[in-house]
Amino acid sequence: MDRILVIDDDVELCSLVSEYLKGEGFQVDAAHDGNRGLERALKAEHLLVVLDVMLPGMNGFEVLRRLRSTSRIPVLLLTARGEDVDRIVGLELGADDYLPKPFNPRELVARIRAILRRTRTTARPGEAATVLRVGDIELD
Image (cartoon, rainbow, N blue to C red):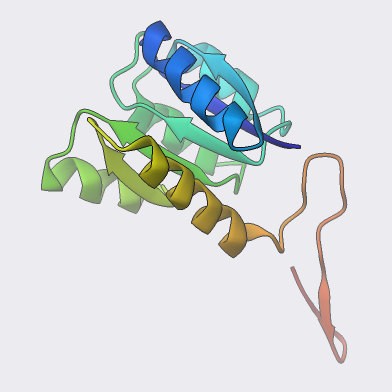
């Protein structure tokens, strides 16, 4: 089962997102502050992170910046900060997608599945990465 990490300080929203994603076949873990979320994301136990921007401890942009310094895990920003500049900053920092709140849960699932389709050539947690060999050159 695909594991997803939701990092959002809104416990009720995490619960609702969790229930919806579980119904769509995902296993969901949650963290409610930036520091704990980054710690969990860096453990490489999840295939994707759904990340809020406005978090206690460390904001989502900083979590994303630190995560990108060592990890290629896909990140979907899910946040009430839907202004153009916020979306641009998030995408420039390395987010794979950006969905403003309020959102349709079906759209969230569709975006998660789209990101996972694009990133399936990378390893699942605990698996070796897929390597493409062309002559003497390896591409991962």
